[in-house]
Amino acid sequence: MEEMMKRAIYTLSTLVFLTIFFAAATAVAADDWDDLPELVFQEYVEIETVVGPNPYSEKENDFIVVTKYEEEGEKGGTTGNMRGTLDQARSLNVYLVTGLIILEGGETGIPYHTSLIVSLKSSEKAPSGQTLQQWILSDSDNDGQLDQGRFQKVTKGAEGQTVKKGPIEIPADRIRSYQTYYDDASRELNSKAENLAK
Image 1 (tube, rainbow, N blue to C red):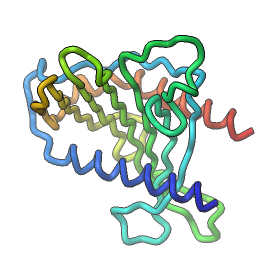
Image 2: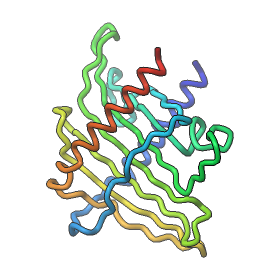
Image 3: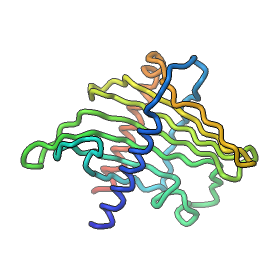
């Protein structure tokens, strides 16, 4: 139980950092962000769900549920966990984050916000240096429809210099075009998490 709580705290701390990192988004031209990567969930990566108090809320019954897929991390892309001779030129981490109000009695929760966080990092051995791209797609009122999106990109050159683009807001029309991507990713993550729980 203690180990699970430590992992939950670590995951939630990471997501708080990502949210803060994206906070000051600005409007940009249509070609100022990269498109979302194809999601291929590898079998060797274990899906995990953690639950913890919402660090942004003073309410005791406000929680965050995180279903996470991490190719780079404790459950993911270490050499010992890989099957075969897969060459990881990049690592993909995906988080499905749901805000949840727990009703009195603690047996029922009402979701009020959902976000999909996609993080794609190139290999540190890449000749041009390491690149980290991050997208957040949000359904801020939990009506099933995306209404917010942000992107940022950080490149660390071979000589150590860092170039940052964003965070930037993705226009509404492009956000709507990502609805199927969001739905498919959410469904796949939830399905894998449920299968592991059985």
